[in-house]
Length: 115
Image (cartoon, rainbow, N blue to C red; front, top):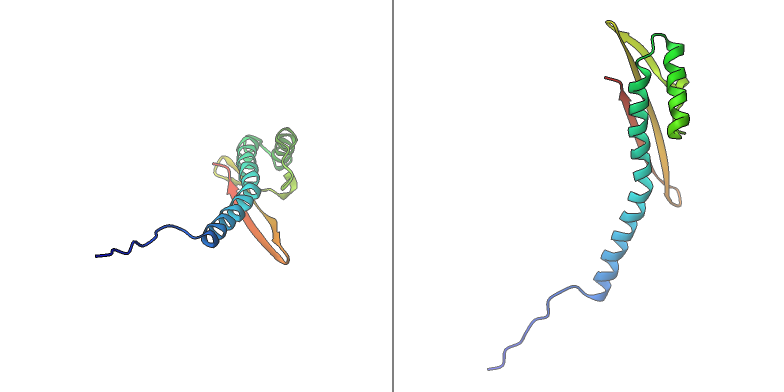
């Protein structure tokens, strides 16, 4: 009796395909990661700015914080400052575009508000 063994595993072409997909995912993740870090810095700056008593003061506090944290996506004039009861609430929204290839872009929309 002659038993025929079947090969198992991934072919070279399959390995190249999986490697290419992983490489593209890594490149995209490397471009998205800084925007996530910037978003958390903006959230913290908005929270600190909500300590201000007037719209001008809130925007000035936020602008000072953007200089410290090198935030480039949003400025104090882009903030929406409202008052809920006795608390100042700072809201923001913005979007970032990451060029992928040719005419393709990845658009990230960020929004948040102070607590």
